[in-house]
Length: 120
Length: 478
Image (cartoon, rainbow over all chains, first blue to last red; front, side, top):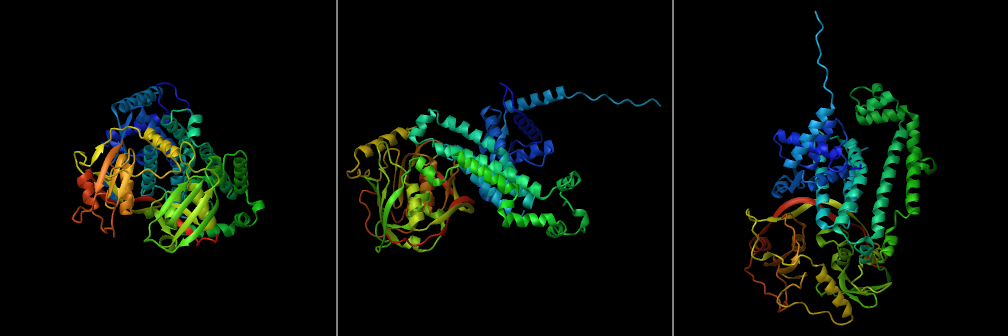
């Protein structure tokens, strides 16, 4: 998908918004599979975002400074006997982008007319 | 689909990741492989994720639909890593044209085969829109004919009995290729088109296109001296490769670039019996400007004369993670940051000198256990690395411990490292006098790593690529 300068692709916006939602619930860091699952839940899709699409988007967001990543302390996966996770964090710029995206969505969605009760 | 398909699908994802990250900067490749591995693990252990055959289909769908992005990412990372013109890089062997084309061809073929598989499945079980909705809800298309407690297997059997056309279709697929259905036809067309367009190349053609040498003649004789006698491998002018008293396992390791701990299967004699090998390649192995890689030629030799059949697979094996020992991140006294930032110029100079002086005796190694610039020196109970990454340190530790050691320090850049320890089994006989002597009361390698490098080795389990020997025979006579 071609990108207009200074804008985010829908998937990138969705990642920022989902990460911001996680942040509000107290989850500061997330890994690739976790965000894919949340994105799937939010869009009510069973199929998670493709590996290539997801990790390419995460990489782009990191390059743009909207996400930051680190590899978790190797002692943790060693203890839990699993591969190490790359943990992403939403930066201040990422939070701002998520906020802007939510505002834009709210502006585009027409408000429902308030139901009036029929007169008795 | 059976539940055993999930590991197969995961293996496909890992294999594809290795293909499209091949030749990229190591840090990028390692990070992508680790991230995909973590994703697969999380999926396999997620209680809410689909199970059995649906899980495998899910993984494959995620793989197939992401391939265009994988390739785009690869091109972007490759362009960042190699800013020089592609033609110059191709001439220098940094960018391998056939390899890029093969990766693209593989991607295109996987896509076409995947799509045709879906078409084939749809053709085998035509469903009405009502039944399709039932299938989407997880019910079999004929679920209403069966008792509610019927197992999935019973449903399949009943479905096959009740629906003759489905049973016929499966027999035709196996026995009569001419009527094998959409999958075989589309796959055959896809492969034919890909080959015709040169998108897929056989390993032999790819090797030739990349001007890799091939051994034209080879003499292989058993050496009765066995493992106790010294082993030598040399490349000589005129395209000659000479190996003296070499075990086949070592040759396999060199051909496939795997250390001993990653070699599994095969009979005991590949380690115990040794051979003298003299082979002549189709051209000079030490041309101007460097050395031609001979791995492809060695693989050909092993396949022709030893009838070697092997494959690579990923297994969960015990391994070590190399991590920082101290909380404050300070390094040990024998691990310091190198002042060099780039070893390419140094290596080019070394290659040039080697080419100019070829035919003469090799230069003597630096004395006193010192490593050459941008190089390494190792001996029993010690190694020294000049301007190497911590991954290189991990590789030396892997060889010593005969177990994979993964660099998880998170430190990048070049380091000078020197490690001295007391081996568990000190060597018999005399050692080179220029090397430091072994202190029998010295530290173990684990203690030495902690005290001298400021790092530590943590036991863990992780994915390790191993080369599995499926078949090998003693060499055919010359």
